[in-house]
Structures are given as C-alpha cells and as structure tokens.
Length: 183
Length: 183
Length: 192
Image (tube, rainbow over all chains, first blue to last red):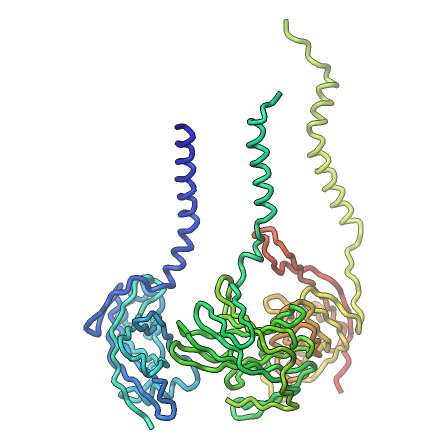
C-alpha cells in the first residue's frame, strides 16, 4: 500500500512538472493561433475595444487566368488607445471550410490591383494600429487587403482578424465577394 | 553475505540509467527540421505544402532585369537553376531553398540574384493554386551530382517540415553559357 | 576523565590535509595571474598574402590603399580599402561574416577607431551579402578614414570566432565569442 502511495505521488508530481514546463510553450502557441473565433454575422463586430466593419469585398477573375481570383477586402476600424494597447497589432487572414488559410499579398503589384478593385480607387494599406495622430483619442482608420485564391474556392469564406494581444481570440466575418470578370 | 535481491535492483537500475544516458540524442539531433525525402519524380509532402522536382539546368553566367536595367552575374563555380512544382498548399507560405551538395555542404539560394523574376525569395505560394518556383544556387560543379534540393518555410525552421527532393541521376542535361532569367 | 586531545601538530596536520585542495587551487590561480603579468601578451603578426583563419572564414589580405571618395557620394571622407580574399570554411552558406554586429577586423588610424567596415564583392561591385562554401571571393573591405587624415600607419586587429559543437548551456552547436587572433600594421598606398 505504501508503494502505491509513493507511485501515486510520483505520478502526480510528474504531471505537475510537465504542466509547469509546458505552460509557457502552450501560451506561446496560443498567441499565434486563432482558436476562439467569435463568429460575426452582421459584417461588424468588436473585440477588446476595437470595432471592425467590413466595408467592401470584391473578387476579380481575369480571363487569361480564369483559375485564379484576386479578392479585395476593406475594413473600417475604430481604434481607441486602450484597444491599441490590448491588440498591439493586427493580422487579417481568409479561411475556407477545409481549414486552408490565405494571408494578404505583399508585393510590388498589390497597390495597382487594390486601386483597381476598390470603389474609390484608393489603397489605404494593410491593417496596422500605429497611432497616426498624436492628439486624437479615438481614430477611425481603413485597411485594404488583397488575397490570391482559386476561383472555385470563393464559397464559405471567413475573414479572421486578430492581434498579438487578443489571440487565441479573434473575430470571424462571413465573406461573400461579388465576382467581376476582367478581360 | 549481501543478498542478491538487495543488490540486483541497484545494478539493474544503474544499467538502465547508463543505457539511457548513452542513447539520449543530443540537442543538435533533436532540434532540427523534420525532413521528408522524395525519390526522383515523386512529390514530397510536408505540413504546409507538397513539392515535386520539375527541371534543372546550369549556367556560367546569368542575366536578368532589375528596375529596368539588365544585370549580369558571373561565377567561379557554376549557377544551378532548379524549378519545382508546388501543390496542396495549406497556408500562404514563403519558401527558402537550399542545395545539399554531394559532400554534405549546404548552399543557400544565392542572394546575388535577389530581385530576379520568379525566384523563391520574393514569392508567396497560396492554397488552391498550383505554381512553379525557381531557385538559383552558386556552387562548385562537383557538388551538383548526387545533391538534394531542400525546401522549407522561410525563417527559423527548427521542428517544422523540410522537403528533400532527389534530382535525376547525373548532372543537368542543359548547360548554358549565358542564361536569361525570365518571369 | 576527558580523553586526551591529539597534540597540536597532529590536529594541525589533519586540518591542513582537509584544506589542501582549496589551498592548491588558490595558489595555482595566484601563480597564473603572476605568469600572465610576466609574459608580454602579443598577438601573432599577420602578413600580406598569408591566410588567417578567423573561425567561419579564412582571410588573406592582399593590399591596402587610400582612395579619394567618389565625387557623387555624400560622405567626402577618404576611403581606406583593404583588398583581401575571403573563403567560407564552414559547411554552410554564411551571411557577410565581417560584421555587424561585431566586425572581425578592427582598424585604428592613430587613436581613432574606424568602426564597422563595408564589404564589397569585386565580382559584382555590390555589397557582399553571402559567402558560399568552397568559393573564395575577392573582396574590398572599406572604412571611412577620419576627415583630413594623412596616410600613416593603420593598426589592424583580426578576431577569431569560436565554434563549439556542444555548448555549455544546451549542448547545442553554436558560434560563440570572439578573441583576438592576429595583428597587422600597414601603411596604405595612395590609389592610382
């Protein structure tokens, strides 16, 4: 019986040690994954003081390469200093029901493509929460993202928005872009 | 006389401990990329993508367009230009390519052809889209035969996939004096 | 009746024996300090044309020149140019091994430390970004000389970086600290 008690104590301590050593690693992983996404139905949602609205979404398919589609998403973000401290940065990605993840394009051609797809011909740049105006408390900023996707994968997409300070929590918006065919 | 049953557990324990100490892998062999090797013609499947070896050729000199001007590069060894097909991408990735020569030396993609079109350092590969990537290496000619192409996600790659592609036997059939890198 | 105590000598001898280890250690370290102060520390002299092994690279200096700055550049200080051959002697591609963060070569013109140099690959005329194994390259290591400095003697100190297959912390293979490996004093020639 005494041996059993010792064995039980040893097992308990071992599990505690594993949990203790693994906790920072788990925390690290959680700050990179978006496990707890709040599903937003209306196109506008808020998380930790940041209010985000999807204002534009469009997809363009060029005839020379019909298997690819460029998807443009514009976000309007209301930032307060508290929200900025809570989020720290902003990461936008698109996911499909199969779990594939698309990150925004960042190349020399993106500027022209976004200006062509947006309604006002402007490119506000990628989502970033840095303070643009020293005086203002609350600011409203816009962010443009461009994604390159297969044309047959435009159904059931969800836009995930999160920051270093919010992950594993994230906001998840349903995306159904209107498709334009370009010659 | 010490009873055998008192000494035996200690001796067995010491032997077990010695065996464990002798067979514990060291840090270098534990924390390294998880390599998946594919024989010639087959695709290697990693965590985020699958790659297949497509084509290779060598050149004595390379030229490409950079900001509207033509840039020439020559070498004391030889330039090896390798092309590979990417499929089954799970998440938008940037890749880093390296060539492990016959001697075991590792040659990273040469930075002298940064900004050359289609080289793997500038491009992103997206889910649902099949693509072809190109990597350029600068190395002594005797490192080509018997070498392996290594592809991994760009950045620190300690415990993530590394895809090793075996090229066809022998050396590349095409050797160019001057190869122009087109998009 | 109290047991008789061993004589003072015996007690002293036992205690001396017990303390012998630490005594030896202290005496040895004192002696090392004395030895280090006695022998003058001097680094081997590097010669032009002789390869120097500096850890990741082998450097063979070939010439030293003082050049006028190009008229189009914003910095009008004269350029001190050490031409050399660099070879990567490791088994992997190395990024520019001559600093930053720490330059492998320290140059002093008089009292002034010339800072971290730029390294130009002669083959391309652009900055050296990488060195591939078994491919030695001719490079120019360029410092900006102090404004108005007359060509005089420049003292170079070459540093070697140490590699350990199993370091003390994790048993991980890593490149560790720098130590001075060689010294060279040279006077630059005027560039044609």
